[in-house]
Image 1: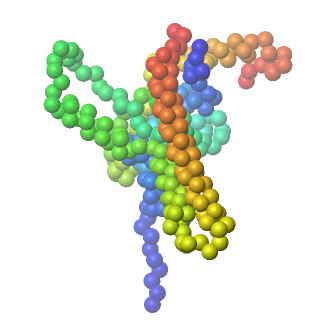
Image 2 (image 1 turned 180 degrees about the vertical axis):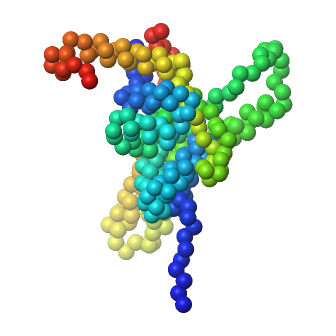
Image 3 (image 1 turned 90 degrees about the horizontal axis):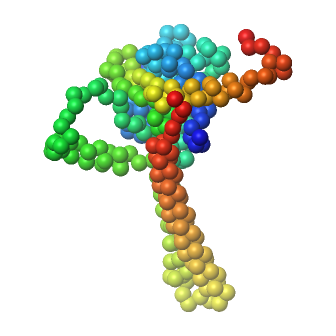
Length: 199
Length: 111
């Protein structure tokens, strides 16, 4: 007797996994997953499970594409600080409490861990090219020795030198991109601070 | 006026939808409201990207709601237009109205 495989009546796991992979670990991810879940439940009642899953996948793909592109353009979907309820005024001269410093440090650590997808992709590309260049370099150095043909050793040396040049070029490109990203973020922050709209 | 002072067409639509939803503005609601108003499908990716941009520009603020079982235990982000957001919309409207003036003979009257 064969038993049909039953899927749990929930959103498609592959789409959910893609969302969790691309979106930063942030309140924005939790809210987006919740929004899609809410729409999935609504669609399932109207279109059936299959139609709802199809829509969920389409929406998730749109979100993943936009989030990945924005991340590559240094516009990661990280939240700004949430709106806080009005607090009673505190004494400005009061020293920071130990809890405040701990919270600031843990926040800084979380922000550093989240990072951006763009930087991760760039790091992978640089590491990949560096590995290839390294292999070429050591092929040139530790190649078949003594080379039976003089031209073969020249060719291997040229490959090794090419690898080194490629590695240096990639490192320079990565440094330039990181510097440009930092400058753009700084400029954007200054623009945001200096935006003035007419009253 | 700086380059970032202007807001795009879709950004304007999103800000206006949030203002019209008045306290009940979260992403699926905004998308539904826009789709009903402009009779066009709104890409969820474009919407979240736009919300992120507006948030970064300081034109939007957000707050979290309590997680509910209907949302699979996930939170909900409600958006609110900030004072700079309202000023940006006003500046955009004034600029567009100035440009629209005197073109009734070519474009016809507004519906």
